[in-house]
Length: 414
Image (cartoon, rainbow, N blue to C red; front, top):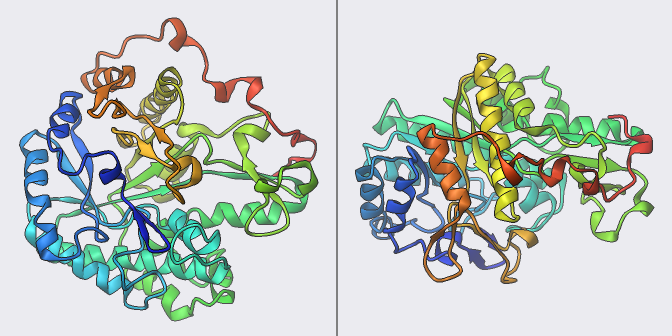
């Protein structure tokens, strides 16, 4: 659920899932063992409204699925607060404590999904509420959300001491032309910042310490995280075909919509610009596991495309999870994201343009209809996954030469 102006885009309402608990039986039939559930602060702020989740979560549990409670997912909270509210972390923590007290049996939480991505979209690019376009606003939003994670887990663990933090973030990598190498390096450091803060590793020697200070974050605020570490039990990797980016100083080579919000350069999908392509799931899983020495998981797998391409993308994620396990990495799970599909993401959920991307189920008929992707998920869960055959043995379009739209390689070095 995200906010644009005074309007909230609620994916569960758009899909009809809210109030349709029978969907849960369809999910369970796929062999799903854990389910990311939106117990969203924006929606269920009051005790009376939170009561709506009682039957839903009981049903999840009765069907043998473990709920992972998400408290914010691209949202900035209910009306009356935002990332600019100095009391935002305490307010979310208060809500988290209420959720834990109401559902003491629930043991896994994602208090804030993708704090870095949400901070960028809301306070650097100005797309979501509170619609800022400044580095200082972006970093304030990131710090605010990450502190909210720490305080929320403290409140949750006051009720259930063994509650697990499943922290998610989009960890796409940045490449660039030579003149933008330092910008690409900054962005590559920035993508790790929520995890670095949670793990208590941001001190005066951290590569982003000065960057934070120059942009309005006090030393006291920064070192608070060092003194209150809250490392995740699982580092969740959200990764999409467009997550990896390419920066190019030759702005004249690109359409106007490619201009970065952060400077006079182009910011485009690496899959469309780099001959070498994208890093892929395996590389980012290995990097995260090495950096933090905690179990990892793929927490969002989705491709907005034909079902054949969706399966190819999902196969790549599944195979990457198996490969890193063979290399000794504790890869806990793979999450097929948005089982009922998603609305308006082609416009970054800034307007209701009617666009829908199906997930494992297609809801355009009025009720969830399983696609071939649903059967693929069931086979993954049951261990019955057959070898690739027919069209599925072909590479996805992100591996094909025709994917390239920009002649960016002449000066690509970073």
